[in-house]
Image (cartoon, rainbow, N blue to C red; front, side, top):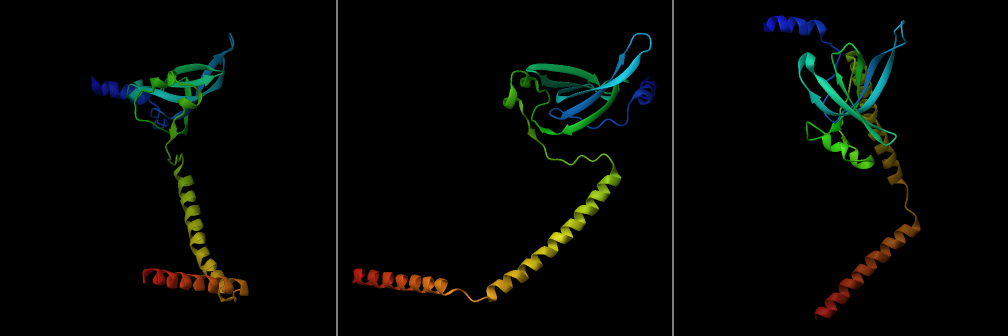
Length: 187
C-alpha cells in the first residue's frame, strides 16, 4: 500500500520547491483563472513572512502573512498544488519557534524579524563563477598591502619638520623636571 502511495506522490510532487522554514520572507506566485468561458490565467504574486509550515511530502503547506494598508492578510498555500506556479525565498529570518502566531499581535517595527545571513544560490554554474570572482578579488586584495607598505616606507624616510622635533624635546624635558620634583618631595 505504501509503495502505491509513494508512486502517486512522486507523480504529483514538484522538484523545484526550495527548503522553506518559518520566518522566511517568500514570494509565492499563484495562477488565477479569469474570464467566463475563455478561462484565461494570470499569475499573481503574494509576498510575506512564513508563519507556519504544516504537513510533509505532497501534503506540505505554508501559511504566509503580510500586512497591506494596515490590515493583516494570511494565506495558506499547498506547495505541490498545480495552482502554485513558483515559490521564491526573498530573505531568511532568524527565529526560535516553529509557529510564529505571535506576529499577529505585533505591528510595524515590533513585527520585524532578524535576518539570517546565508547565500541563496539557484544555479551551480552561477555559484562557480561567483567563487572564481571572489578568488580573483581576494588575490587583488592580498597584493594591495605590499603596495601600501612601500608607500609607508617612503613616507618614513622623509625628514620630520622642526616643529615636531621641538615638541618631542619639550615633552622629554617636562618629564625629566617632573621626575626631579618627585625625588625632591620624597627626600
